[in-house]
Image (cartoon, rainbow, N blue to C red):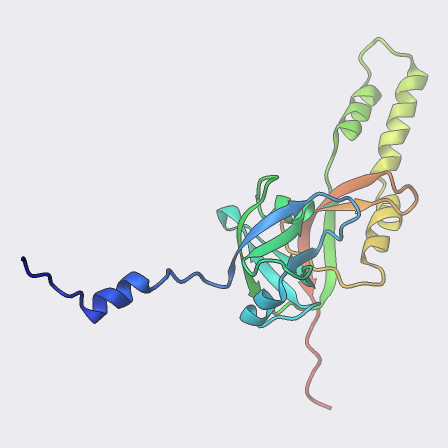
Length: 212
């Protein structure tokens, strides 16, 4: 019979070696529950150990087109796969993920305390419609136009936006923010109303002086 060549040890090792996957690479699914904390990413206990993070840590997420944002770690339910993550709809939007999710990378972040954050309101369709009504199209009377103008002005009044949206959102808790993020904030006076804001500027708090 013909002779056969015994496979080398090197060939055996190469054939049996599985591709190595970075523990930082996770597949994120999107939870669109309106009650979900928009700043939280859920990962398994195994993933936390591999990444050197614990519950409550701030992490940097990178999604499509190298879009980055910050999130707070939360433990996923027991049995969650180590390569899986769950993000809010808000995080998914800032990471440019589709509704069904996608791949992200996760790294520990050295987040600094913010001294000042500037948020710019995003105009929605209602704001634009009220602005059109205020301009008038010749079909309505002056009183209707005036009402639309007043509503639009009240909706975008800086003091109202701060008192009803921004202040309650940041009060009593740590909220990671990243320049360029769009965050959706629920109204404190009407839970059925929410408004989107763009994080346009972040000023980091100065480090305390080591000198006495």
